[in-house]
Length: 340
Image 1 (spheres, rainbow, N blue to C red):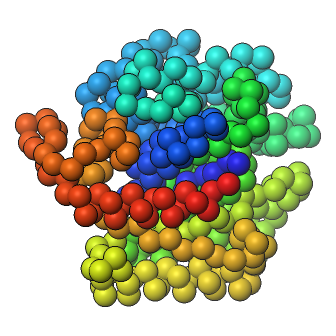
Image 2: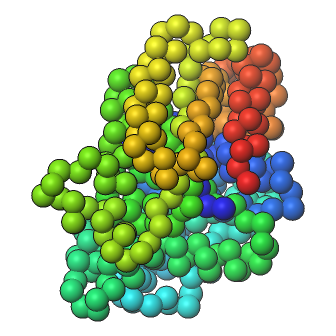
């Protein structure tokens, strides 16, 4: 199964959630293979995977410095810009498989398609090539670039049980469109604010063409996907992220804001239940990770490897306490149990 992790709003925890879900799923499913795909130009997920702050930045910069030979999503898109309508045959060389050579904290069955800042520039080329009238299927050929890469990577791994998680940029740009067509399920993280509630409406409009103005109904992303008979991902879950909790429930202030998000999601589901897995909406609350996120991101360390106590982070020693660590692990476990 392929999961896209996306919301049209920034700062809701998409990248850290991608890291946690990918590493924890790989850790708890040792007979499976997990591919993380970094589709954000900031490449923060790749930096964490490659060793965290400092070490990961060093490894990422060395990979990016290889120019036309760089093994990143941007390097692959460069090759597809030269060959937009057929696969290059070199797809599998862009999958980083031996990640423990970069970061010994990672599970052995985790793999990475590395991020690349050039995605922003390449978005213009993607729009231009996909907008050509010839060949007639130019739009779908280009929008399948990422899917082509993922399918080839899955075949290289050679196991039926492969799970893919795609960390997406908030902007619904050309490369985000490619990410949406490469995944089967959509996980939508939200934070406890009014912007996240509005972002649910944006996701419905941008991805599914919900309540699109009349003048754009034939040219929006959903309409183009329907024209080429391409399925869009179903909404798997809406994550109520980073909540402050008391007695393992969101505090009143967070609960009020989450209620507004739920109202918008339920409104969309009533009108278009076919956009949700089994026609149902699944909400999952994930508490504020506190110092856990700081330690994990800095060290490239999955939560299962974090011990309670002080940790060295630059010139500080943030404290990881047992209760919030266990509470965070339990909420992630609950979400993982729904991913098959």
